[in-house]
Image (cartoon, rainbow, N blue to C red; front, side, top):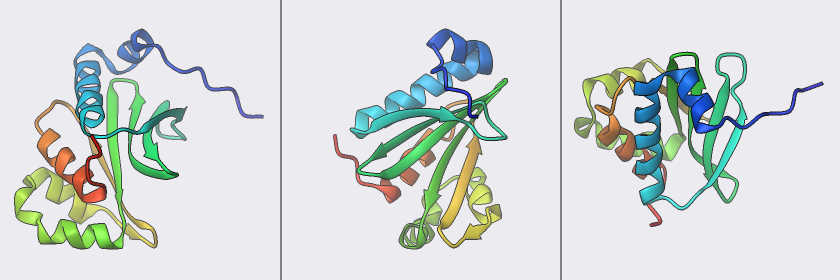
Length: 138
């Protein structure tokens, strides 16, 4: 039987990932929420993560944030058309983002890009990835 999910309070999340990463997490959420009007869903994070925080609309996921002890991840899945758009804009992305993209396995449903963010330095890349995935609706 699956345990029911206890949605983490801000304090629980901060205690889990640490104060500095919690500030990065909240900054990323603000960045996403300024540009996108989306449903936000908390879930279990699977085997590798404690929590998943997903942004979705109309049954389609924009991205997800993942939390575990002293770490948080940002995932965006690029399908076939989105990968084509990414490839045509490669020069706007940082070497770090290109490395994640190039080293990520391509599955039948796309590339599942996972970034373990330590600070806000990749935020412009994350914004660009999200705009490839979906045009901002705010």
